[in-house]
Image 1 (tube, one colour):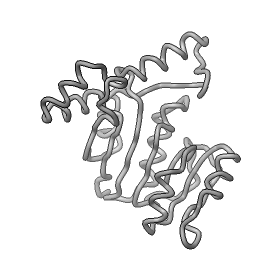
Image 2: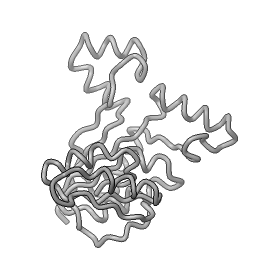
Image 3: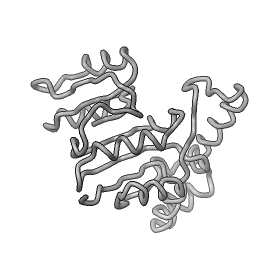
Image 4: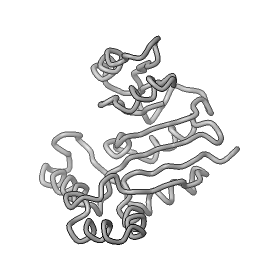
Length: 191
């Protein structure tokens, strides 16, 4: 299950690799885009129009759930994550990509939202999750953290000093990645 498939590149790769991928999005236009993007042999991508905070799937339905910055642009990220975990099979993998309020892009987007009177000009709502908030989500939803890392360790996303340190000291990259983490991967514990 891919929740919020605005750019369905990862679902397309998974479909080409033999996965049957369900893409859930609130937008009719995005659902049409996903269906037209299916170039895999046989219908491997399926688009379902639905609200991420009320997924219409049974409990324990998916082996893998991905959320590429969808929950951070919803008014209630906690509800979206709870729904994603609900449909995840025990032992299944969960991947969440989230901007971080401590990274430059997160701070910049929060400033844009404040400047626009509380509504982000592009998304309407933007609430990047801190690593601490992600950590609390793991405990609340009985997920076992596998990896937390920054998508990018470049000067534009983490600043020049941290980018240089992450190149000079390979072990520091993992620590800075955890601190500035944008990619959060977990496994569901057996229920």
